[in-house]
Length: 402
Image (cartoon, rainbow, N blue to C red):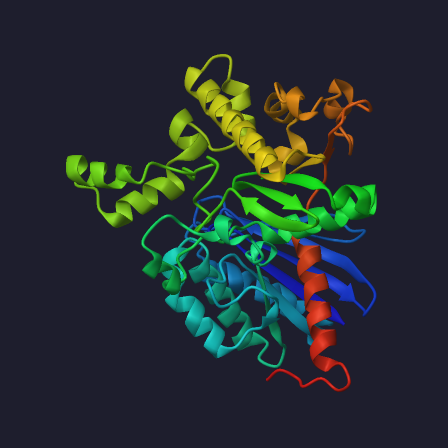
């Protein structure tokens, strides 16, 4: 059967089609609708063995219009009737949801009530789910939550130091990028064996969104993102951690309200806010020598990643492997090198040639700590999760979920 995976972001929709059996998931199509809402919104896809197809969407394209474009393309496929399931990446499951499960009206209602915690992702994700429910009403839809990887966080890492009564409302640290981290740990086991993956691991998902995870014996024990995906490291346009007194200060001095502050920390901060020119690390590197603002943005990003690697090494009691992934982590060698520079005391020692060649292992053979680059695949994790879920609910002797 076919599995469709959907990953809705604040300005994009990534998708993939898998030819699936109980033992194998083969990706046959992957694509993305990017820059939704901007004048240069693009729909592209590539089928296995065929040339990439690209088309431009109308200037006023919205998530609704983007969903219509994707659904229209799917309905043209003669095999669209054989969809076995549709998987959706849900960034924030709140206190109620973490493990992959069938999407119900009750779940959507609960997620809708929790949208205040993640207004940049949850509304778009719910919109996509309802759009596919309308067009493919008989196809089961399954939610795959980005918080699942971190659901076993130690209590000391979950708690926020605010009045305890808020914990009952689900206000605690959750952690995100879980689908990516799940893939990295699976690949690390495949590539290096359980002797490595059961050790003290730091995972670095560095892209427009960025976070680290500290993993011991395959379990997340801490992560940089907390109650929302805005916290932690400075990112492309997100601020990362801030002094909580800043909002009160700006409210008093500039009359800034909640919506304006939210817009600032999500869309005007991070690399973009410091450089005042771009949220793209490649653009900033091109300007680094001639623009001090770009140079400071890069330095800030590398400093905060490096600092948190040190903090997680302390939480883990050392580090056996560091894994880079994400658009920056996978592709920008100079950023990896700058982050690792000065971390020799943790056993991290980069091989310059291996790093420049984007090898899978970029640490020196004599280095105590392995440093690896692994290309992540969240869609693959979603497809695998859905097949496990379907086999569980359809197994003999099991009660099927409604």
